[in-house]
Image 1 (tube, rainbow, N blue to C red):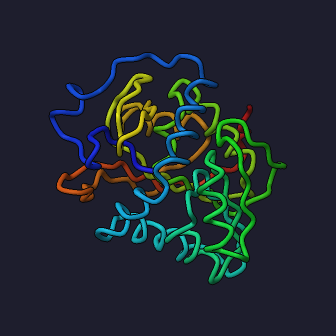
Image 2 (image 1 turned 90 degrees about the vertical axis):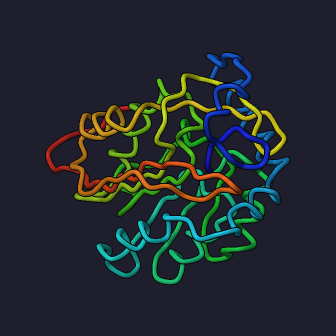
Length: 239
């Protein structure tokens, strides 16, 4: 779920000018904004995604190449399941979580072999050692950034020994801002790339590869941070 402010799906210098400078310190309020927003713009978002290839499938392939067939993968912020979970389900078992019921309904139709749960990536619970890999594309920036470290530690716990983590999120720094996106209010919150790398390390992951890549969204280009990491042995993530 990409995060950008302009109603045509773009960002640029106007991002800060267009942003509605409302603070959303209450995470429950932030969740409601994201949930209601994605329920309303699910179709518009699908059209935006379909405009041009984005880097995520290339990064997903980097991950899949490291997995044995039949691996169990969790997608936090799975959206409609297209295209990532459709591809994953060809060789692996996929579980998806999304705050938008509309998106979950789409995912269940698009990936009938997957297990899709309507829930919040920040509060959903899974047993320890449940997954071989966790992915999250365009989702963390819709969760208050002061919760990101906790989420990463919980992911560590859910992963099996030497499991993988793949994240794609905006390469920006926004402190709990609500702005207009695709014609609806939307919540954004993220740290700068170097801080995110530090959080990944502190959560118990070894960073395998990272990059900032630009992807086209409408008539604009948006930089995204990509992080591929692996669970280090002998450490424990804590909620």
